[in-house]
Amino acid sequence: MSIMPDHWIRQQATEHQMIEPFEAAQRREGMISYGVSSYGYDSRVAPEWMVFTNVNNAIVDPKNFSEKAFVEHNEDVCIIPPNSFALGRTVEYFKIPEDVMVVCLGKSTYARCGIIVNVTPLEPGWEGHVTLEFSNTTPLPAKVYANEGACQFLFFKGDSPCEVSYADRAGKYMGQRNVTLPKL
Image (cartoon, rainbow, N blue to C red; front, side, top):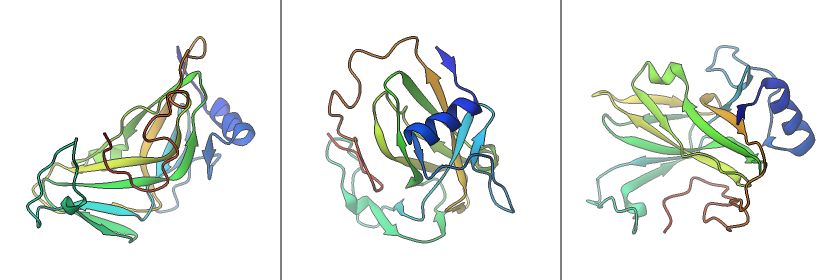
């Protein structure tokens, strides 16, 4: 299994629509960078947020998750309360090849501010907008910027395609378009 370089990512994005919309080079222009890097793709977060709140005394239960635990808003900035989190989604829509596994890491700019980005791996054959979790580990409110870099995806190509892909299993998060809450 090998990590895939910038030219492979560009080829997959342009010839096979692996990432749409796609930025062929890193962009910064006064914002947190996004686009192709040496061995990854820095993705943006869309202005679609679900901020965790306990205003309705909801219980966090992954088997029966209540939307009452979140406040939704669509803005260019998300303020995450201290020691809390928010969900967002990538601007980009991903279509993962059947011989590739994708791992996501947070951007150092956010990590250095105590904001952790968490994403489970993107499995072979999966497609959709990626739901991102931003944890504010600080005792202060934290700001996250929409349409700017949020995380970096690393693409690992297997020696051969898997026997059963996420698409073959009809995975429950296949084709998601919005911020998606836990499903059982």
